[in-house]
Length: 177
Image (cartoon, rainbow, N blue to C red; front, side):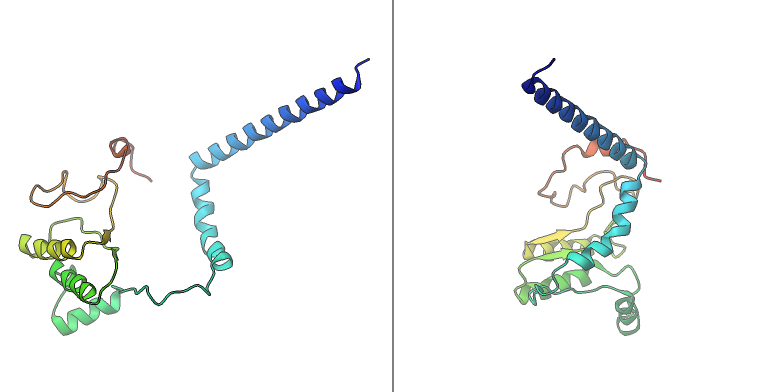
C-alpha cells in the first residue's frame, strides 16, 4: 500500500499532466482559430466594445490636434481652389510648414502616396522638402507589393531610416482573400 508521500506525489504528477494536456488543447484550439482567421474576426467585432469600456475619457489632451482630410475638405478644395483629387503634394507641404511654424512637436500623416504625383517630380520634391525640414514625421506605409507600380525605392529620394526585418518573406505569401 502506497504511503502518504507517494499519494501526494502521484496527485502532483496527475495535476501537472492535466495542466499540460489543458495547455496543449488550448494551444491547438487557438492555432486552429488563428489559421481559420476567426481570431481576427473576434478582435474586430470586440474592439469598439473594449475601447468604450476600458478607455479613460478623463485623460484627454488639448496638445493633440487632428487635421482631418474628409469629403468636406475635398468639396471645399474643389469649389474654392479648383482642386480635384488627388491633391497636389504641395498642398500637404503647406500644411506641414504651417504645423512647423506653429511649433508642432510631431506629425503623423495617414495618407498613402502609392504613385508619383500627377503634378510632376517638382511637386513631390516640395512635399519631401517640407517633411525633411519638419523632421519628426511618421507617414503611412503599405507593407506589400500588390498595389502601385513602383518595385524599388526611387534613387532621387532619400531612403527611409527604418528597416522591416523579414519583409521579403511577406512578399512571397499569397494576398489575403
